[in-house]
Image (cartoon, rainbow, N blue to C red):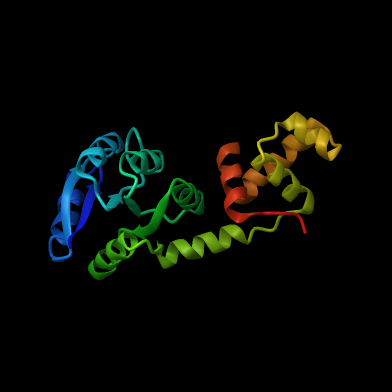
Length: 204
């Protein structure tokens, strides 16, 4: 049986190129093309794809925002991110949003086709460059107190609650959070919580 694929990219030339590439594999059939995250969500509900080849950076609703909505519209769909970015602070949210695969646009024809088949089969696919980025990301040296603050952020505690729990001042909590964001190259508290949940960071 054919694997139904929805192609999502805000560049029409890229979409058509990917559709043409997928058409060379008799196991794959392109059931739709979308130029935005919003359109991808709408199409997913009607074409019922098994795999969504999803661009990460798009105007409006980007890939990270679109992924969970696509999964709601088509619960059986596997999300394969296809992007140019190897920043760990982009990879982490993409995986947290439900992506089963993360592949770079520099991947070969065979690698793209193989990745689509693998995620359709429920297997995770990670580009080697993305794996390296995540390994470096996870290897950041944090102090014991920073790890404690990180875990409490993941638990949803406010700065005041963290301060009370650790018997430190709110100002000190803010300083630790600022240090964590800088060390982990994260933009905000939400990304910090996602990082903690995915890494299962606990003080040793």
